Length: 258
Image (cartoon, rainbow, N blue to C red; front, side, top):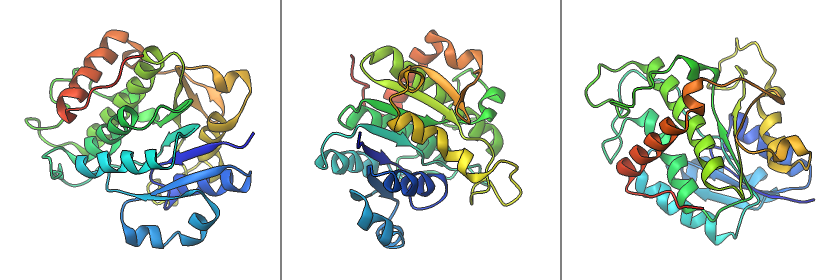
């Protein structure tokens, strides 16, 4: 069956690879670019897909507008929250004053989840590094702690994984999954990454379109097409609820109930 799929961060890396693969399989893919210039750089792929929407996920205002742009294309069958960033030298305040790693990796997918017309499937990109995160939620926006890029990234991946599980609980009609794509040779992963690039996007493609029973099981964590163990904190429903409440507070956007 032909699916309609929206992929964030699809101008390069795993997002572009997944988009090209899914288009090649006959699916309708809506791409996302941070800017008009980046959208122009993928014109040939856009011409074969459903279109492209533009918005900088570091900006809450642009992320809200992006959700509206997606909704104008009609309901998606699946959304792959692929966009992300690794650590940087400093906190990198956004226009709203948030740490950029938190804004792009967590706040933006949270806002899009809340505001995009609810699809049948949601896929969030995590990382094995989530297991090394601080789970206290005391200062998730890094306003008082000394900046630590690696820890900020690890925490963002714990939060996005917990969000995937929270959505699975709250929206029983949606298949919500988290994926560890592994360490693959993208711009983010670097040329020395040990995993092969196709492994990095195969799982999220499968979750987006497959009718296999396993792909339709919600609230799972996947790595290279196999279910994987997750940090206990991410699976803790009380932690999930505290996180969602904190994200609602930071964004001013409420996650709709079932």
